[in-house]
Image 1 (cartoon, helix red, strand yellow):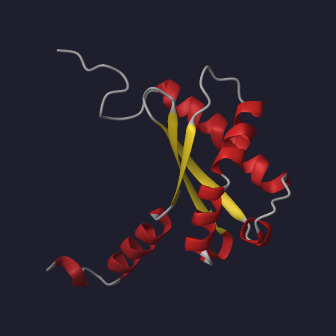
Image 2 (image 1 turned 180 degrees about the vertical axis):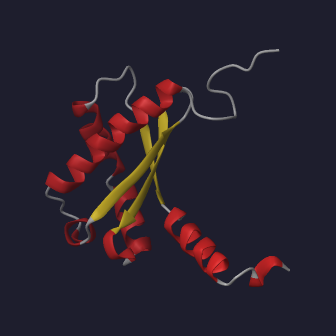
Length: 127
């Protein structure tokens, strides 16, 4: 029995490639665009990863505000600007469908920090 690419497991090569193209386009748009929303004008954001759905019609965009400040406000502002940013992606990346963007806070930094604390604790959390 063979497993089909794009099923519930790891992302396909195509998903990874499209995700990286979208990440680059969003990073450039966020760095260069003048936003009317004061939160997006004041907060510097890093797009850490984009995970497109198997059909490439939607994508989760993981972001982290520099300094880790105003995270909830930044995510809300990005959701409000999602339509505009979708258009920016559409202008910069040639895709059959322009994906719907859903923004989420990248919590991988918190996870790494927590793991490092556990490891530095010399096994205290081994319970």
